Amino acid sequence: MANKIKKTKIAAAPAVLAEQPLLTELRELILSARQRVAQTVNAGLTTLYWQVGDRIRRDVLKEKRAEYGAEILQTLSAKLEAEFGRGFGRRNLLRMIRFAEVFPDPAIVSALRTQLGWTHFRELIAIENPLKRNFYTDICRLENWDTRTLNKKIQSMLFERTSLSRKPEKLIEIELQELRDTDKLTPDLVFRDPYFLDFLGLKDTYAEKDLEAAILREMESFILELGVGFAFMERQKRIIVDGIDHYIDLLFYHRNLRRLVVVELKIGDFKAAHKGQMELYLGWLNRYERKPGEESPIGLILCAGKRHETVELLDLERSGIQVSSYWTEALPKAEMERKLHEAVILARARLEGRAS
Image (cartoon, rainbow, N blue to C red; front, side):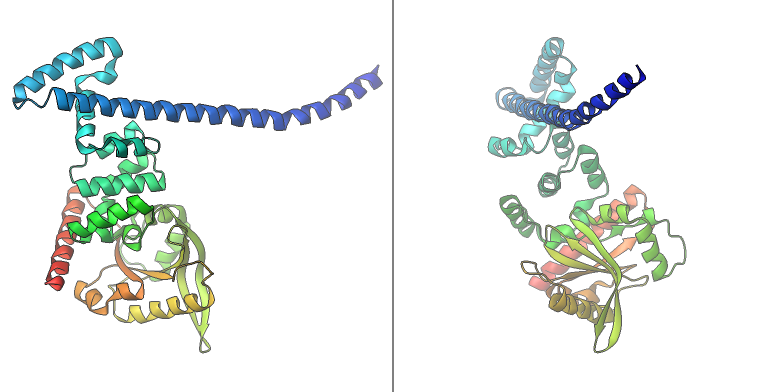
């Protein structure tokens, strides 16, 4: 009897093993189908909300009297909410109207609805500046942010920290249109100034090696702050030029830019000598490390501060070098907004002055 039981167990084992790949495949099929259904439903709701907002905007709120529009909206929301639920209350109807106002082109909405959900659009329609709204719309679409990430990027004033925001509005509009047409990122869209490194926990006095060690310890958070597309390759990469050893602080690769990115860390203000050091590193990488099909390597110098005239006179952009400051302590939101808005205004004024 014992032998029979033993044989039964041995015979059953292959059947159990055979079921595992089948179960895995079935689970993947079901989950994939659920995701497609959810995406279809979400896209359908986004279209519906735009159509509702557009219809109310065109057929009801075209009246110039504000009290008339408010009265009709209150009546509509009461009836729709009673029949279809809270999703059609007055507050949501106002969001739908705003949606149709700031995204008036149905073709653009149709293209975006497969990549962005209604919760994304709720964040985007709250942005007053059209250029800033277009920036977040396209970057969110390209980098596949969830709603939480989108909100976090808006709150951290990502747009104001890009080189793009420092340009005249007409140039911003042209670059954003090119981004929408080609889906191709440029360094002006990738690099920020300043970078927020408060997560490193650096206090008071610290050395460059402390900064580097903290970044390596918090590499995941550092890459999130750098942005989507960065892949860490090496730290303290040794290169030899004329028999002399040099060491690159941090070396990354950016998948969308298709190029190596050197990050040099400085605890003091930017100095003119830093340019020569970075140019040496970029030249060496371009000659010995650049692969076929890649763009020329570019560099990011992260320093505690910078003097704008020094940066301008060195014409760093031509050398493929970006200089950005970093903040190791989080500022109150009002102060952060003030400082970043001042930086944008000053940068645009300098650009206009150079052009004139």
